[in-house]
Image 1 (tube, rainbow, N blue to C red):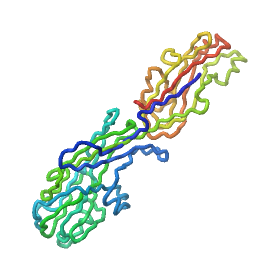
Image 2: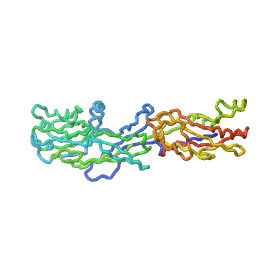
Image 3: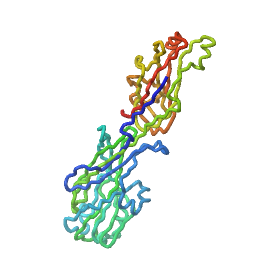
Length: 410
């Protein structure tokens, strides 16, 4: 019996990328691009996470990379951002919104990403996890009773948390704070009158929750999320500091690069069905075999869901058949066993699961982690009653062709 394997891999390598792409934007908008990729790692098969590939800038890569890594934070600096005070800022204003005030969307919000080819939609969650800027004003204005001007800029006013870094000169400073999840506003009060102040950069960190890439299609997913900026907006700098732009959009590109690979050993595509222990019991004692069978090992690597189909050179019922030279036919039952880490559609282990022409039962296999070149088996069997029919034509050879297909287009 000849068995031909076939693998159908959707769209080549599977890639999930969150990208800030080329979307039309409203006026007065800042646009950032976020990219991430999932690529199975044989050295770490249990890791089912996207790797953030967005280029970093600002504080974390340029000044304190070790500190940022220690608190799982990274930064992006946008030097196009501008905000200006609407008038003089009195000393010790009666409302924190009249001084240096920063409130960002630190709660997780949903955004949808859509596969470019299949249209499949997945949900990503994003929150802003850090905020910083360059403010331009005399640094001395921030000194208050008992505290030096840099106390809160180097540290952080609650509920923000410090990264413990500041760069400053006489008339400006760059700062960055960590923003906990669902934090409120963080503000600093000036101790002297500020005649005018501006922000000439905006710096932020963010945190993502991405879908399990093992359940996603190979290819690229796009999506975006938009935040408002200005008094009362998602990014709120108080009532005094008014940004030039009133919208901040993140465009995402997620790339998923899956693996589905099956290897048969040399000669593994030719299957000889034999009784348990060979033909000696029949030849010497006339004992009819209970069955003819062969278990064929193969090696599979898989990081994505897939299905298995069966095609037959000779169809008998819902399976393939064998025929001898005089036209006698018998069915052969074919089944599959898959390694640990691959589950069926009911989240059950796969052990001698029948392969049928109608595909019922093998419509979905789902990895729980990246399965990297693990042994599996195809099972071929002619049952006792059909073996009895074959023995009515001694000396003839039964043969047939079955094609087993591993298909990632689920």
